Length: 230
Image 1 (cartoon, rainbow, N blue to C red):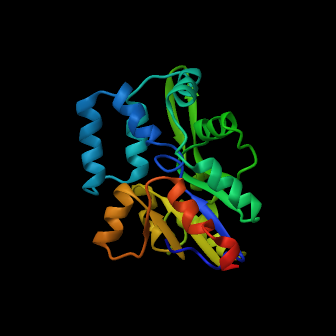
Image 2: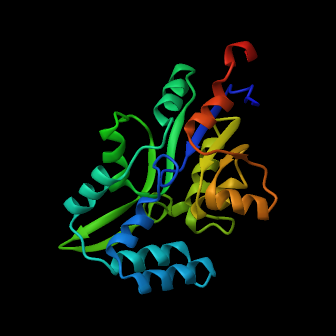
């Protein structure tokens, strides 16, 4: 097992859905509550690059009716924490390594989920759901908080912009992810942990990465025999 020797002036940025959780909460939500043929149709358009991610999100949430309390119940009763995350996060704190969640998902679910598991002081960058009598609209993080950036010619997406902001302070940026919303930021990270869709994307595009199955794997890369390495 190789380890990451130099963690000085480093920060860990981490996806949420399918990374900190054992599955993508949004995919599962629409698999459960959405109309199957319609959801599959618009997902196909997204993966064929006929529509962008924001359009996909808007169309998916417009297709279902749900109250916020029911959404929270789904998040807090059906979603599980990825194996090893608590151990990994505790070790990050032990060695004073900063950590932030950078998600294409929604603060409405992420914050209560993390609080349920005892994680209340982690910076979270995510979109927001607006509930109104069963109707759901999406408020995107960059359109609310990064207005100055989204109009730049070189703007890529929210995750890349947040990474770039952290790069002004930290020398090494480590990213952990699994999905399609991570493919742009994957190209910018100094060290990348990838699995599932993101791993396939990295292979196809010859992006260097470290594969992982759960946070016990990542913990070994960070902290196995760390005292000897230091």
